Length: 452
Image (cartoon, rainbow, N blue to C red; front, side, top):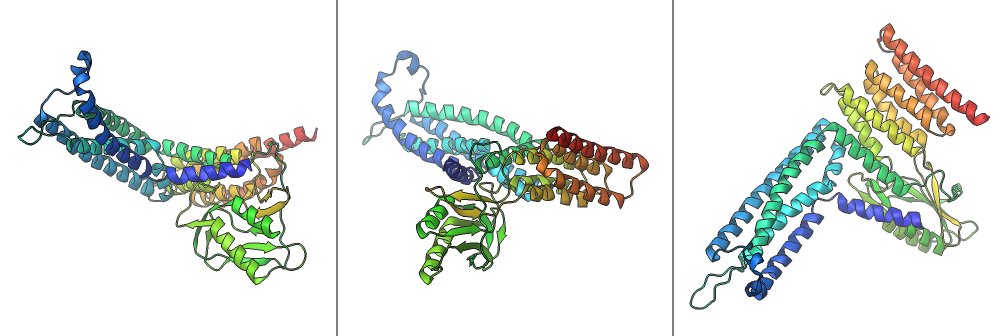
């Protein structure tokens, strides 16, 4: 149950974090509220300010107050436009130079969202306070919200510092090393939120195997499977005394009218027409689709982003094997982290402890295939890239559980077969042979230790 709550909380947090508008919207709403409240308080406390504070707050007349507020609001909307422009340019650069799937990494950047919130809040607050400034005439008394104008001035100063820090942050964010680090960090968060460690106290539940006569349910729309409401499925399966198997994992693209789930019951009397309708409605409510992959429950999404960066760097138009090598380093570290968790198909239980719902999930072999195949194909002619791929396998041979040694050796054999068809000189082939020998020796040494 704790794992379900953690997954749900992470999904909600990811959905909010990847949107640019929530935090700036909160800032604008708060600015409007304070823009109304502070002038009201101003009218109550203006005459009672201590002398030292009275000397610090704004001391001009209504005309000067309007000038200050207009200057702050006018300049801040310009700065906000500049900030948006710089953000869009950064997104375009990341998309064209590295991978279009890195855009979500930028939109979930809390620093960018807070900076925009400060700018928009300062602009909105100044405009709201401007409404309360009145010049004295025959019908109304003059009112200058001195504290409110002073707050607007302080917000303008905060915006200046925010702009400086934003530019510094942006120059760091567009570096490929920072992008790789952010993707790696995000993928680690997703793994921790959705998977259970191998050494955890929870026992692994038996994997559900559907019988041949299980009823198949098809997808009602096309798109990426983003999120699965595990609690809803378990509740429905338990109440109807059925077993459900979801055959597609988050991150998969599902085509409308293709099979996505199987349902069966041990014993007779299933399915009926009403049962089918109820289950179809439950699946529609529990399976969430969208036009793009997200990191909420898609464990392999971060790995896909890292592989995209490596492949993009190996394209003829960019030709940057160093970036590819750096990406492969992060890939090796991420795969080592994956191996510390329970991978492959999983099942969940109901309140009585019975297994009710099963889910298809990628295995370590699937993740390793994703990590190695495309870089091997596009970088197989570059000795530097081939050496980096061999080091990925060497790192994994030293860190992952022994049950994965077979898939590592299989990838090593395929990589050697690719390298054998390429034109390398003797020194390059010697280096590759030495690295391959280190991989085999590392696996042999660990097997020997575990057998003792």
